[in-house]
Image 1 (cartoon, helix red, strand yellow):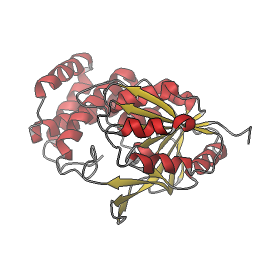
Image 2 (cartoon, rainbow, N blue to C red):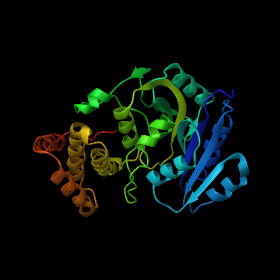
Image 3 (cartoon, rainbow, N blue to C red):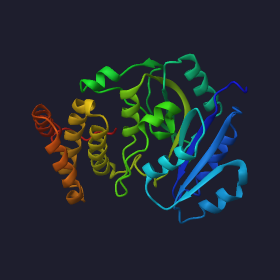
Length: 303
C-alpha cells in the first residue's frame, strides 16, 4: 500500500458537537490506510473543541477564530499533506469504503482531477428523503460548456467533493467573505472550468437534515442562496476572466432573486454590483440586463 496515494480528509466544524463524533467515526471506519483526518474548528462556542482534543493524535486539529466556511476550508487545506483531498461537513458522514472507492476512480481515470459523487439525504430518524446529484457516473469534460456560458449538470454538496491536490492548489485559497460565505459552487465551477473529472453516481456518503443546517431544506434558503450566488459569481469572474459568459448569467440570476426576495444587506451588495458592472464589456452588460429581467419572474432555484 506504500504506493497508494495519501489522502487527506478535511472536516470543518462550527458548533456541531452533537454531530461531530458521527462524522469523525465515519472516517476512522474507512478501510483505506494511507490517510489523515484534519478537523478545523471555526471558533465553536459549544463543547466541540473538548471532544476533538480528547482524540489526541488520531486527528490533526486546527483551531481558529470564527471566520466562516471558506476560511475553514482554506485552513484545512494548508494543514493537509494528501495527494487527494476529500471534504466532509461536520453534520454528515461517509459510508464504508468511500475513500477506497474515490482513490480507485481517480486511478482508473488518470486525467481526472476531481470526483463528485452522490449522497443520500436522511432525516435524524434515518428516513431517506432523496439523493443528491450526480445522477450518472462517467468521466466528463465541461470546460467548453462553461467557456461559452452553458449550464452544467448539478453536483452535490461539499461532502461529495474530492480533488487532486494539484487542482486545489490552483483554486485555493477561497475568497473569505465573513458575512455571507461563498457558495460551494465556487469550488465546483472552478474545478469543472479548469480540469476534467468524474461524476460518480454511487452514493458514498450521507447528508443529514436536522433543522439547523446552514442551507439544506431551510424554508428561508432562497434569499440566502441568492446573496451567495451574487458573491460567488463575482469572485469567479475576478478569478477566471474567461469564464465571463457563465458568470454573467449567474450574476444576473443572483441579482434578480436578491431584488425579488428583498434580501437584507443590499447596501453591502451594492459595491459588488457596481464594481462588476464597471469592469465588464458591453456584450456582458447586455446579457446581464436581459437575463436579470428573465430570472426576476422565474421560480426560485435550488442549486
